[in-house]
Length: 413
Image (cartoon, rainbow, N blue to C red; front, side, top):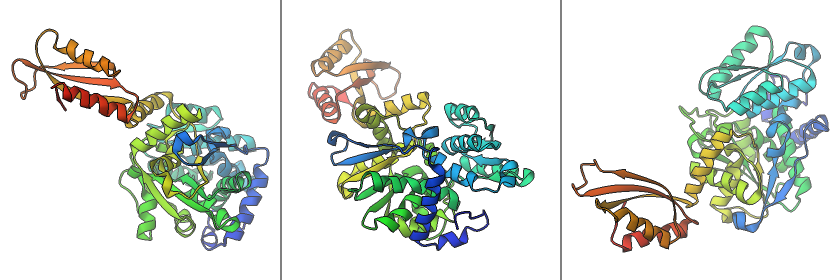
């Protein structure tokens, strides 16, 4: 079944884990010398609080795991089909994977991306030689445009997750984890459409059924979780999250049954948790990881006791716009209690603000920003509200700052 054509998904829905493992091993042979065998880095206990290893697919060719599935899918096409070119739709990582794979295999790639796709991802996709076309404002709209283009031109549509060859390519991540870290008891992986989670889960079931596989979605884009609960595909009306790489509104007809059958648990994480994980990767692990790639780690950081250890968290991608990264870092610092914003009502007279700033200096809070507001109806004529943003050392220090200000008699909100 390794060369399954597009119209033969059904047999793979009922294929055994052993058949999937055979498919994935054949995919691994194709990827030898193409995709990197990415390292597993052992995190310091201070990062998470329990033994956790990081599978660094953010260091993969093209910046994410997507090259694996894209290359296998295109490499298994008949030559005459490859000659007609390939087309894909993506927010960025699958786009780069398809563009890179197409270039390596000597075929043309056309990639449809949302108009608000990350500029570095668009530039990188073009840099790999693809014809990039910006349409719509979501991956789903780009998918429709790509499928229409395929029907009009005869180019082969490369689905980002819902194809057996793509899933087999992604499944090689699971094989590598078991070989590199045989003591693993839980593998945690981010999930959008479910291709990576399904691939890892089915080969783990074949090789190590004692190992748990946990998929993680952003709370604001959890179509896969909702669909598994419902027992059928659920389409979200919106999937707005900073983790654009997993902002998929509807799971696939192949990935959904595989995830339902072989993934042990699906968790969701907040935007704050994702931002905190991105920050932790930079600050503690010295790794650049995009929000979608950090979702798995965010779940472990949220509740490490929920995962039998040792744990491997898959950092699935590292393609992040520096401007977006800056916003995420600010958000992550706030979520970690490193930025504290609050309002204080002061008498509108000389020296009042200086006294407040002196009090903040005494508790070693670094003032970043001060804004005066005198026109609110709730303020008395002789009052002023001051909005302050201060830098602190964490949650406990933030609480100390607020308690100190309140104890000195200031009205804090």
